[in-house]
Amino acid sequence: MGNSGAKETTSGSSTPQYDVVIIGAGVVGNAIARELSRYALRIAVVEKELDVGMGTSARNSGVLHSGIHYKPGSLRAKLNVEGNSLMEGLCRELKVKIQYIGKLTVAAEDEEMPTLHALKEQGEANGVPGLEILDPEDMEKLQPGVRGLKALFSPTTGIICPYTFTIALAESALLNGVDYFLGEEVREVKRNGQKFTVRTRKGLGLVSKVLVNAAGVLSDKVCRMLGINDYTIYPCRGEYLVLDKRLGHHLSTLVYPAPHKGKAGLGIHLTKTVDGNILVGPSNEYVDGPEDWATTSYIMGKLREEGEKLLPSLTTSDIIRSFSGIRAKQAPPEEGGFRDFVIESRTDVPGFVNLVGIESPGLTSSPAIARMVRDMVSALVPLREKPEFKPELDRMTGYFHELSAEEQADLVAKDRDYGEIVCRCEQITRKEVLEAIENPLGVKSVTALKFRARVMMGRCQGGFCLPKIVRILQEDFGYRPEDFFLYREGSHLFTGRVRS
Image 1 (cartoon, rainbow, N blue to C red):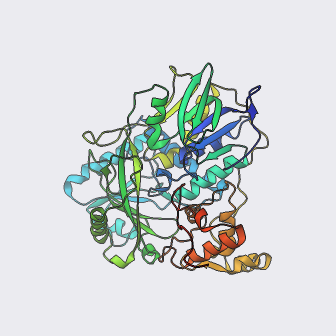
Image 2 (cartoon, helix red, strand yellow):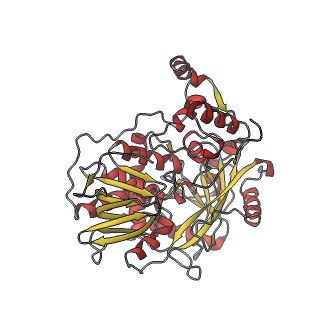
Image 3 (spheres, helix red, strand yellow):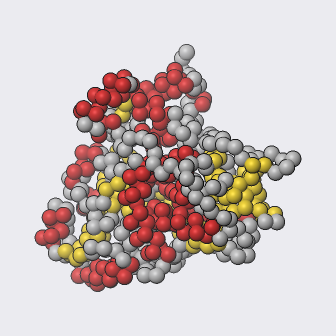
């Protein structure tokens, strides 16, 4: 699936030849692909899932961190602040919604006050602008109802839709000539002479001068394929509750508790999303599997309790969904806390650019990580800028229902599919569903439609719109019931028909 652009092959062989192959189509892998697509290179991205951004990149808070939490001089600190500064311009090019709404890190007890001052000093050392410690009166002006002794306000903290952003990066890379191989799980990587050979479970083979490991929670596994045993990823699960949009107006800025040393995350908090929901979470729990995305009744109960403390008007009926994500932690459970990013061009395996342990703030840092990897690649293969590079995507920012009445009328006059609502909860039109089905990457899972058009994301969670979407897929695109996957091969929605 994906782009089927022309590729060089070796004499007498059909194995595609590339300058750069990237393993992993999460936010970091796609940011690297897009950055490298500015240059006259043959680039491929290999991803085991049927779509981009299906792992940690879609399963997080969507927060653009300011850079207050990371040790000065560390890669996490440097790339966080740089990535934050690049995001606004990048989102403008990609037509992705972004909001810098700021964050209050709240000290609820006297013993937490030194943490606020330490965070402020650390943030200023990292180059984070506008940091200020506020008293309760000023906290109340920013976020009515917030409770605490004082709070550190970071104005450059923002929010973004992580899966929309990841998809947009991939579509931009695709537009600029990158080949995508989706549904291709890498099973073997070998270095032969001056090149790498990558083979997948389905038998796909690719040859490349440079190999980039952006496999996230599976990055240590890729390392071991090349005999590198320096790293181990300890999966750490964070669960979330998604609240109905009814409560969205209650949160005008992000509210976090003061962090406690040794914890695997930044604590349970409320996060507003760019689409109007509020997230409660995440929890922190080390798990055995790198894809153990379960949600548990115990943690959901704890999140509900914490949510009610932070948002007293919250009721059980306001919780419309739960989900979880996995942090790619290098720190084992007995150590806790965070280790720095690993981003290296290996001298023992020339041509191998290795990224390990890219957990938070990986989303925020992704544009800066891409530039850092670009510079590493430039030392391995020559980079020549392409004058035909297209930085902007030709699409609408946001959704039809967010346009003015006049703009909506103009679109309906041009295409009457804009005049038919398919998803009542999110007010998504038939035209938007059709565009999601016909996405440039060629992805046809139900989750792909959710991530591109927000169908099935409202209060009814698809109870109203899923039958309509199934009908569109059958009647307009010739799908059979057994063709429907939720998100990966084997995740069947239907096994047949009850009646013909």
